[in-house]
Image (tube, rainbow, N blue to C red):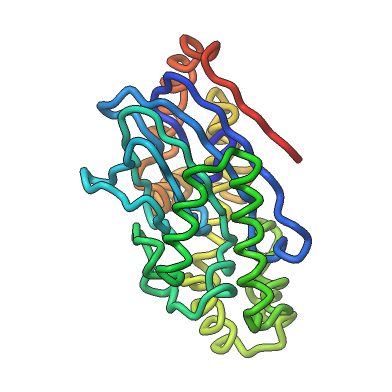
Length: 289
């Protein structure tokens, strides 16, 4: 995935992408605010979404994204994923997004996140419809900078009105998510000052995932990214780097996480890399730290 976490692109006529870090108050809950302006050529052209534990808040204008041939609302939420999905479109799409960390959505709403796995939902089912309608109308007329600022202020406003759940627990979960290779769940439970049962229940309530599943999603997302950025890498080197010593076990768990084997994913990325060389001159990536 280049630029957009959990997203990989199939084909591209023209694209601009920008990521912005959240303000300090939102850093525990928001991964980034982002913008995409891309022209799709139809057919299978689109975005591949991979499980990474995060939630995506999407406002898109112009052509409509489709999932399994079902058109998405202008504003929609992507829940945590258990396997890869595709967003397809034809024509130009201009998009403003908010990437929420695995516990971020629960910290901003009272919704039960346990039922959001592999869901693509109208955003009005999560946030007040009047708010969503107003954001749609304003974002339609705004440019890149103004649109991202509007979203930042909206999420910041929600944060200031919300009673944040156990921030100490969020910090513990952040350690587990950011460094799944070196974080032992038993040790993490001890640090949390909860019992094993309480810790598991609270993690599911916050993220929709069990601690074990959250750790696995985080680990294999890092594995996937390592292959994505270097498709020619030796898979056995990747396996040992991420703490596996039996390839059959590694391949099985990778497939359980993404729906295809490491070798299948590697071949796919090599094909995409070769194809992208032919259109690279038409793509502009904008990154900000």
